[in-house]
Length: 200
Length: 199
View (cartoon, each protein chain N blue to C red):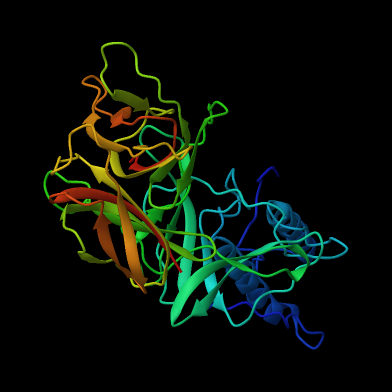
């Protein structure tokens, strides 16, 4: 990062000599070039001047304004998460969280990703093996356990077993964290699953 | 509008004429630079505070080592696009509508049906149909052409079939943004969870 010293927008002054103007000009041009070089191809680059090399988005407190034909992108902190990318639709329209929880700790059967709107998608294979005394029910737990509301669930049998259907119920809520770490399903064999959930 | 003048100073001017023009240019640069960027002289100068994308009339050209984010108007809506390198086919990244999360009630309640989008562009629907009946027509909003609908029975209520008989629900008669709910026979009213994708 450049060292912001002094860009002076109020130079030159009539009381200054031309020598002083020149010093101020050099300082301003240097500072401008340094600042411009952050995230952008430098002013004095051989080619592609003005293009972006990277886009650091500095955390914002509030939704950003959008004109009638504009979309804005920015980052805000999400409670319980880190900074996340937000967007806002044209004309100061709907603001939505684009990115989501990024700490991936999944095994080779269970995965998750995010979709815009503060939603998370859990998917993978549910290995159905009921312990003695559990009847036909088993809980499918989600990792990371950050679900606040399950919107929809879909299961598909891995094998064409007779009676291989599945249904789910009884959302289970952790009494301490007030989050829903899993659901109870009834099945007769292993299932592919997909769960859509709110996490904010 | 910026007062920046890229044609000063001129060789015919006295220095005292150039002085206010040069200062106005430095002030204009200071002001314009702070649009979308952390301002000059700040510790984070040059980084971005926000990216406001003005709608473009056409897709940008990208070289082998460039990609591009930009907005374009599609059917009167401004949407965000990602242009891969070498001017490959751009990908639409946003959709003009999104409805997720909670309602405006106090306390807020999560919406029973929600809609978002996937790059492509695809409209992504999910939710619960409370008390779905055999053959019921379901209409999803916003309108699209449905490509995929998956149904799942929630809180199963046994019908004429025994409690150990597993039952299924499926979507038939897909037509634009509507479909019909079909159960295996003998089922009473069921709550049905759905995941659907349209374009």
